[in-house]
Image 1 (cartoon, rainbow, N blue to C red):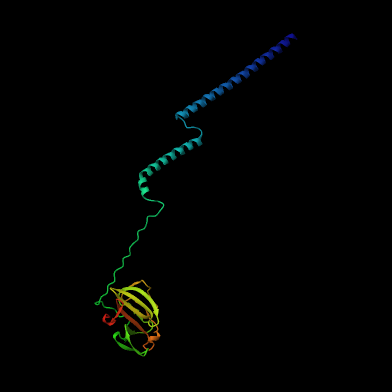
Image 2 (cartoon, rainbow, N blue to C red):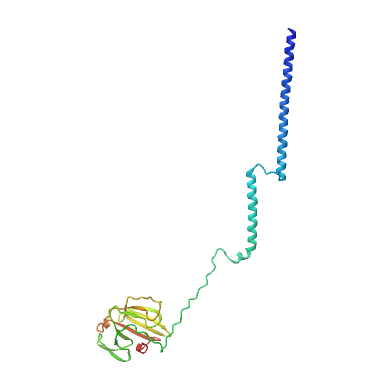
Length: 247
């Protein structure tokens, strides 16, 4: 009985020793693994610091790359600004350069006593120019001076310009109806009356032979004479005989 008890006691003691040894071995193995892991981490840190391997933190790496590229761009921009800086100071980017006025040069108009005029309409002269003596006006039944010529024509007949010039006035008056004044140059002006349906406006530069308009219904001052073109030629504001210039 004693022997059996001793055997059990020894067995328990051996089991305890074995268990203690096993626990100690396990703890020692864990300590070794920790030491090994610590050495590996230290080695990785040293490698990253020396540039041997890339860090495992990819976000940090990408951020550092972006910072490097940004720094390069900033350096290039600074260099460009340094090169073109003086030119930028001379030119204000916020405002457009002032536009210089462009002078409009028109061809000068010339007219002289030797210049020939085109006939404005084809027709007979109903009333001649007469500033030296009075002539008879059938509609008015009276004798008057006539500063123009009155040429017969039909309503809607075309009226052409007698020379090159510029339209300076368009007006309507009781005697000559729709009337156009044309500057011929050198103090000369042509006046067309009894018109309608004009093709030009004031300020227009026109050429000889162009259609200025059409013959309209005669005013009450020329009802007996019938439809006609009133045509006058002025020199420095005074009437001259158009027949001396018409071809």
